[in-house]
Length: 331
Image 1 (cartoon, rainbow, N blue to C red):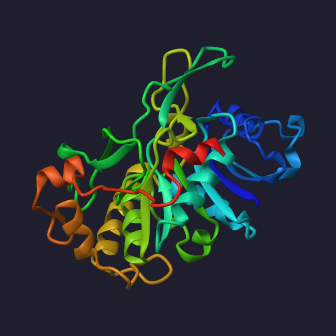
Image 2: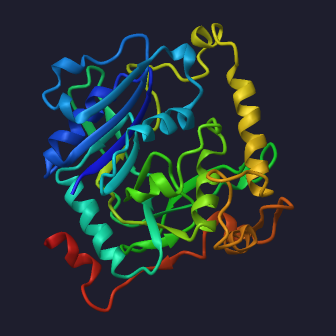
C-alpha cells in the first residue's frame, strides 16, 4: 500500500528535514515514494540519503521557476499508480506513525462517504531552532480546524478570495468545501482524474482546486490533530528566499507579477467555465451550488451571507453508527 508524496520546494533550507521527518516517522517506511521538484541554486545531497532510491527528484535553476502549481504539476508526472497521494510543502514535520494515522482516518471515512474525497486542512505549526536540530511542535489544539474565506480578501483583485483556518469545538471529522494545498491526502486516482493545473501561480491555487473537486463530485474533509506540522512564518534566524525574491526575479523573462496576473485571470476563466478538460470544471455539481453552500455568488462576485462565508456554518460533522471515530487510532 504505497503513498506517493509530492513536495515542491523553492530555495527551502528545510527540504531535507521534511524528507527525513516523513521517512523516519513513518510506520511503513518502504511504502513511501517521494516526488520532489527542488528549485534552488544548490540542491540537497541525494547520495547522502539512505532512502534515496525512494525519491524521484528534479533540481531546477530557480530562474526557471513559475510558482508552486507549476512545480506540483511537474511532480505529478512521477506518479506511478501508488494507492495513496499526499501533497505537502517543503517545510513540514511529521508525527510518529503519520502514515498509519492518515490511512486509518481515510479508511474510516471511506465507510461513511458515498463520494470520493480528500483529507485536507491547514496543519498545526512548528518552529525550528536556528541550526535546525530541534523543532517546537504545536500540539496544544485537539479540535478539528476548518477553512473559511478571509473577510477582507473575498473577491480581492477579481474572483480571487483569500482563506483562513479557525478552530471549531468538535473532535470529529468535518465536511467542508475549501482546501489547503500544503496538506492534501487521498487516493492516488486524484492525479489522473483532477490533475494539477500548472498555469496557476500562487493566488488562486487553492480555490481553483476546490472548485474542480466540488464540481467533479469530490468532497473535502478536515480531521482533528492531523499528524503533520507546517512552518508558516520565516524567523530572523531562518530566512529563505521566496519566489518573488529580487535577486532571482531580475534574471527572469516572465516576472512574478505577470504570473500572478495570469493566474487570477485563469481563475476567472475557470469560474466562468471557459477552461477545457482536464483543467476545467466538472459536470456533476454546479458552481452555483458551491457558492450557495459557502454564502457567495462566485460568478457575480457577491457576498450573500457573510457569516456563512467567513465562519463556514455549513460544516457537516461526520459520524459513524458502527465504529466511533475516537476508536480508530486505538487500532
